[in-house]
Image 1 (cartoon, helix red, strand yellow):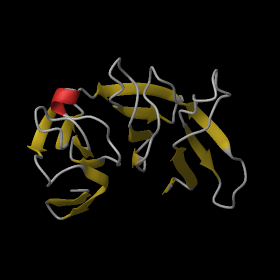
Image 2 (image 1 turned 180 degrees about the vertical axis):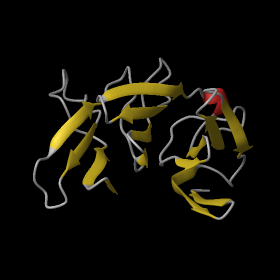
Image 3 (image 1 turned 60 degrees about the vertical axis):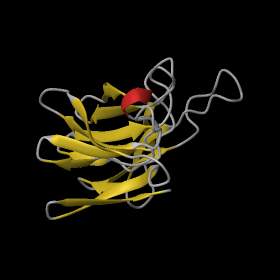
Image 4 (image 1 turned 30 degrees about the horizontal axis):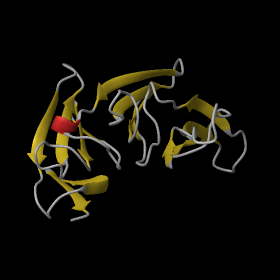
Length: 171
């Protein structure tokens, strides 16, 4: 949950539009007033867009950035998205692939014109996850660091302090 321009914004990992089957609970992006009134679902996630958000949203003016841990491709590896509050439009910025990182379980951190984040799986052949950056100007994705062995599986949100980013790994 984040406070942005006087409103609370967040994501729910499950729930949303009534599912077609009992297993379809892909999550929502929502907002409400700080006093709890005027709850509104802004977007219902689905397999095509990506589903099941775990991290917080990252605000930047009228834009909210986030990650989805599932869906968005035939391999169900997740995505990076932006949501524009000025017109309630949803855009997939990047679809993860197992070879270069998959299944993000945290938020992105905006530093300059880049979004930094972690993906807990992928990075063939090690499958221990990655620290990545996404260039908002060129829409290019690159691995900053690939994990291997028992020292990987990054989970959760990044924390920026000066020119350093901190995060935790499961391994």
